[in-house]
Image 1 (cartoon, rainbow, N blue to C red):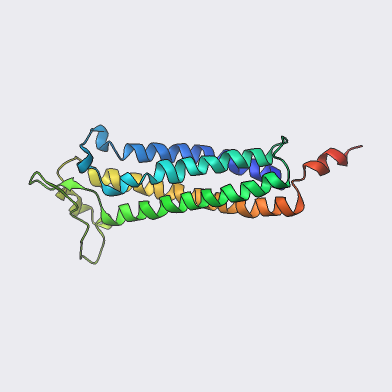
Image 2 (cartoon, one colour):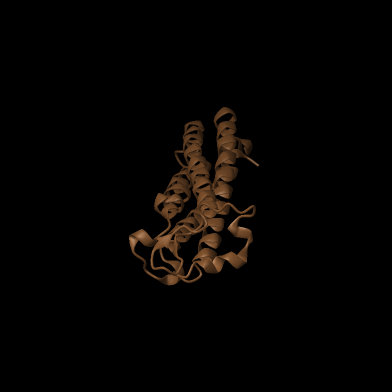
Amino acid sequence: MCTGKCSRLIGIALFPLGICAIICNLLLYFPNGKILATEEITDYVWYFHGIIGAGLLVFLTAFMTLGAGGEGCCANRCGMLLSVLLALLGTAGGAYCVVISAMGLVEGPLCDTGDGTYTYPFRNDTEEESYLFQQNTWDICREPENIVLWNIVLFSILLGLGAIEALLCAIQVINGLVGFLCGTCLRKRRTGVA
């Protein structure tokens, strides 16, 4: 497969992943569809890891990889080099999403444990096993309802999306370097048929 075609495939794959990451990050602001006060939302949601990291930074990479893989003005060595630089940015955005999502999973959600104040009941958990694997401890959070499951599902999805995006962007870094050094195969196709 030539580097231009690989670039297009990566660009096309990054768009739905970025949209899903933005949606998941936005859903974290509204547990179970409820609107909460700012101080009642988990800290790690405010890092915008799905919106900026796995969303906007990856969209920049996707646009450039589509351009570098097309037959337009960017389908040349300079376009492939620029796609490498933006793919590095996309890799960093995906990795940022992975790190923040993992921290959000480890720390647990901010919730009301029944006394009317919002705290992190799992933050300083000294148990051998994490709360993630002890479903019987989840009912300590009274409000918002099902907040533990809500956070686990959405942070896990964001972690997976960020990892896939970082991997695809890293592949584009290698693909773009090969395209920069060896060309994108477009010139060979045009001159190959007489």
